Length: 409
Ligand code: AMP
Ligand code: MG
Image (tube, rainbow, N blue to C red; front, side):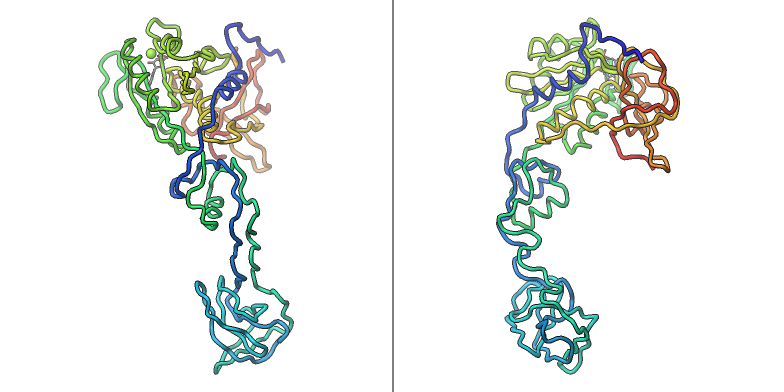
């Protein structure tokens, strides 16, 4: 296979992503309440400061017994339910009723489940002949022992992690905050979706599309504006957005046109790390940083280019800012179900990936792949990462893919 050469003025996606990640800081940790902590990344390890359970607890509804007593009729001395200490002491020949999660009464060393008993006239028949010491009891600290490391720094707080923090009474964990993101569309042609475009105008798709890409990452949009193709107005809008954001995402205005003003303004206001990629769609994608480490992504205006650029470069940067240790999605190998015409640049084609009955991942692209055609994003759960080459990709050929959504059944 002949792999096509990279033009001298462009850099590869891999090199560009490396530059983005190298220039992206990790946000300084803060304490937040548990209500706000879901999905955030722990900035320090969590050591259990208590034993869990904090008392020997029954795992069954039944009777607390002395194991050595074995089977037979016993005197019932009372009951121990969850949430308090009944102050009972089980002596040879006696038992106490107990429920799941309740503390084991003094003297008892096992619990017999209610299914293996009968009760009547203040007495209980234990029908289980052989009872092991410790049976149906969770000893102190069996789930988490005091001093044990239970979560590493860098762990994402999902449901299980959240439950652990709550169990341990860590009400304000130390986490990396969510980055603040501003989104800016540029272009004299743009009007809002509820407006009727005049001749020559179109509706702004990118702010709304990018808003959802951010929302899928649980990131609110701190600011969202349209800037006209006028230099001073765009400068003001850029500066205003930079003041409230850790990341500014612009779309449009980075190509070679006379009114592609963002390009020039990035040179004036920030340090540009790259502005031309060996990539399709998204060749003119710009990345810059300000002196206070605010990141600026100048995405191309075409809606598909903007969304693909977001996926490949902005998303990893946002994840790194938020403390994620693995901000780049792993690539998987998929089998294409049809031939694909190759391009002269490495291309990210939108595709639907499903699992075949024998466990293969099968990819079918979403039709015409023009960078203006948003319909090529619809229903896609993957980007195929196709190298630039002359030979067509053949049906059944294996290629790399980035899963952007759940597998289709
Ligand atoms: P530009 O990168 O500014 O040259 O824009 C490239 C193409 O994308 C042009 O056809 C623009 O009209 C279109 N475009 C730019 N911004 C948007 C937007 N926010 N929503 C929809 N289309 C856009
Ligand atoms: Mg434009």
